[in-house]
Image (cartoon, rainbow over all chains, first blue to last red):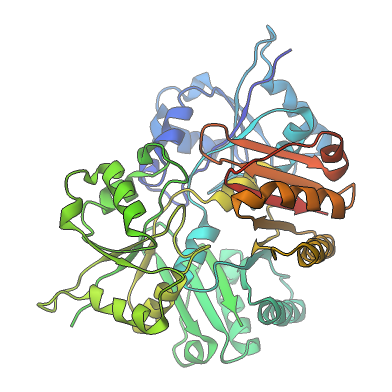
Amino acid sequence: MANGRLFLIPSPLGDHDPAEVMPRQVLERIKSVRRYVVEETRTARRFLSAAGLKGHIGELEFRELNEHTRPEEVEALLALFTAPDGSPTDVGLISEAGLPAVADPGAALVALCHQRGIQVVPLVGPSSLMLALMASGLNGQSFAFRGYLPAKNEDRKKAIRDIEAQSAKYDQTEIFIETPYRNDSMMADLLMVLKPTTRLCVAADITNPGETIITKTVKRWRQEPVSIGRRPCVFLLLA
Amino acid sequence: MANGRLFLIPSPLGDHDPAEVMPRQVLERIKSVRRYVVEETRTARRFLSAAGLKGHIGELEFRELNEHTRPEEVEALLALFTAPDGSPTDVGLISEAGLPAVADPGAALVALCHQRGIQVVPLVGPSSLMLALMASGLNGQSFAFRGYLPAKNEDRKKAIRDIEAQSAKYDQTEIFIETPYRNDSMMADLLMVLKPTTRLCVAADITNPGETIITKTVKRWRQEPVSIGRRPCVFLLLA
């Protein structure tokens, strides 16, 4: 039995026309791939429809891979790479927003593909982390992504102190995210805990209307505080 | 005097048609920007010409920002954001390949723009680091980019041990690059120094013909070694 390939298909960070932020290699590829592993079917259908498959969504096959998927269910997804007649079948992996297998559970499928010798092909698209990093003006030659910091107050303050120390030790930009409804309490903790000379970048609504990317020292943020509100936001700091 | 904006304009990772990997927002934006800060003028002209400006390169203004640029010369680039008549002028920043201001000296100009209140707008394009990370199947929820490791033999082995320990401590994917002619000696050192259970990904010629992205344990790499040769390559490991 021959295997197809796994295409890692990015999706937009907002509700705009996918062609704005997707290169031709993506818009062409989705015309040939018929089987998709997606974080949420509803969002993936909406994206593929807007990206040029309007009227053809019914011809596609969707399977979900998200935080509820058990390891043996990921294993079962490998059957998608072969058609009933044994011929190789390509599969697309799509996350909720941005690059699949970066800050989502898709990496488990990619890892399995490597174990089984299935070719993995990443396609170009929007990465909120990289767009924030390049626009921050902070150190792009050394950086670390920390995912979500702890949600509880004292744990979070300790985590902020820890990553500021790491940043100073390695001259490394620290990147992290927060669930939107906690953005402003995160910002308050950052301004309370960080040193005045540390540079802090707030990057909200990247690639969307109202995109705001501002880097200032903590001292200046304290003088000119902002409300971020419930917008998707990436935080970056360099001590 | 009013200021224009700084657009961060990605470029392809290889010699193919830029439209393959550049979304519409990039191909449209370069039609309106007339002033560019680039890592090397010759490469930037070739990219802009291939991206749709063939026959119009003579109308553009280029200034270089690279490892030879002194801080006071970066400061002087701010004059580009205002036309002689005082009207605001947009500027594009382009690196040798991929995303500007990530693994190149462009971040110095971005940082200055933030200090002067000049708006910075990142555009979507190929990032060898993110494409390698998503296709590696390694941890995408926590990762660090280390740039180049030391070139000298014993220093490099120590650096490899250090980042393997960091990877284990933080469950963090470690990403690093090497100058192409040293790829194979880097690979030899990695296979000598790393633990057999550590997973190592070699991602070469990303987005180009011959793209090779393979993740295996160090134990399996030792059984099936490869020659990478002088191809652009990203290394990733997870202990």
